[in-house]
Image 1 (tube, rainbow, N blue to C red):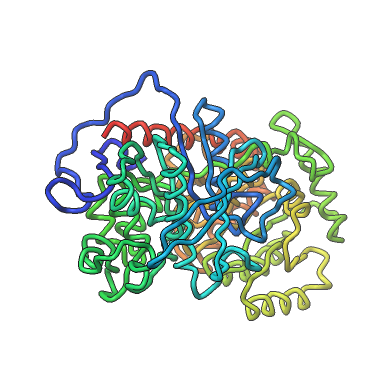
Image 2 (cartoon, helix red, strand yellow):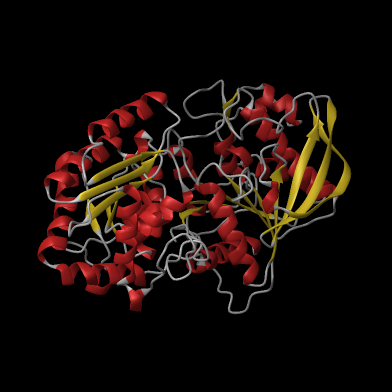
Length: 527
């Protein structure tokens, strides 16, 4: 974990007046041989399965459980969306009727509800105003998204204060809740909330929450000359804009992203979307923690979505699932290796390389299965055209859409999983594939590079090598990895089988990241 041994700082500016800048020569981190239980509050825009758009929702769901089973008291605060999956919320009831949240020169009346989501203790904030912040048809995608989540962040902090809650740790996520540490330091510490420390996790730097000065009047921060300071919230590229994510980086006690490699790429390799100078300024409180996956959901030994369950000692059951997958998709039942792609049809995911991989796999004597869709009609139309072109092939099936049952069956039935991303903060696809013994073919970026180790070229011991990796984002790079995977399957089946077993032995549950986050919490709590 990069940066965890460095000196973390209290939320807000340091004593020398520079926001969040730590000493040049930090002392070593203290050790915690025995740790007391913590009161941890997660403030998030999403949590699976009640409000899910992407991987952030899975992280909040999985990490919350891991922290709780380690003996900590964990609560989650979410917006009460109209689109919540109420069938996953149990004992939902009102717990705070008159929460008045300051907004512009007045206040908005809110009701707070409590319910259990698969054992997780969750509070849902429902504002009553003409702005109708969360009673909409989707979670994101509105012109006032910045104001919606600025309000939610202020409401969450107001609720903690009014309810007399003083957590040890507040863990917030992405730009949507990046104002939480700003509010804590600038408003609520002055009201007596001196106990909490804040950890901010950034799941994707591509979205930062840029806005104008109106935000300050709305949220009660006022003082534009203070917040438009370059060392606070002023955007690095646009001097007339405020950047919510930058504010989170400046004011939080510790900032993580979802893999060590992505932390380095965002700080030093141009993937910080303009925040690179800020990350350098605050690098002593910045690091990466690889996400986990929920092994209660993604586990071939107990998976109810697949016809034949299997494990490391019963790996032949995987081939029964391969036959079931071929039968479901009406593909030829032969000796060919099956390559799969599961994911959003988004340019980030390397769609031109996915297209090339389909034809390359078929030419090299393999089968190809794709499951995914795009919110972009043009991309969807392109893949529908590809589907029609290959419709008569007995070795290819493209499923444009999403099907939960089918995704499990593909993970269980495919031999290789392609993840050729342009950039990838962490990636869950390769982690799930490893659990199912489906050999990942990945590009060496972000979390992919941190979790997949090349069979032929890795410096890792042989038993830790679990896939095929390529460096350059081009067709030759893709072919170098995919070609080796197909050749190994055809020519050295026993080697390929060992690779499958190596993949299944890897532990990418929430066990290790759970401990990483507890180390961070303990560290910043002592500051």
